[in-house]
Length: 182
Ligand SMILES: [Fe+2]
Image 1 (cartoon, helix red, strand yellow):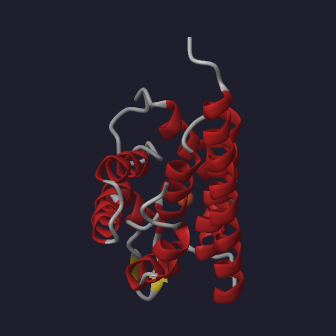
Image 2: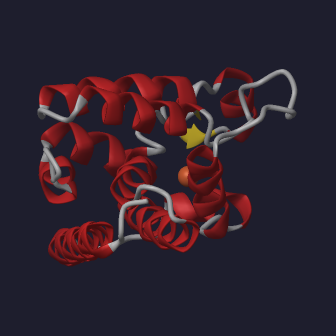
């Protein structure tokens, strides 16, 4: 049973504020990719989808003379650290299970190598899923951050993903019940 749905997280004003900055369409796409990859690999689909949705919520807009400055961003970016912290705070506030909140937060922290001195970090399968899900939706020049989606459409798609997660978790629980104990 889930303590918090994706829809509740998605509708929160903090989520809306930060996802608006980094791209709601991208957040949704990564959430769906993460769900599908987790399903394929037998990982927790709820954790994967939540981390996918919130993975870029730590973005800050780096502007110079009124324009986005990629160099400035490269030099100063800590969006993975900031996102992990913001997501954790939000999830705890919404009543998320603390172990889940920590796992989601760590998957956000390690979804990119961009802030790390080396790129040799060893990720858990779930952390790798969120990183791969993000890469699946990446477009050249960071264009994936600028794709637009209307709020109502985005909300419908998050409600659908919630239903898919619940259906998956239910069938998983039923499988566990019929499996003979050894
Ligand atoms: Fe991303």
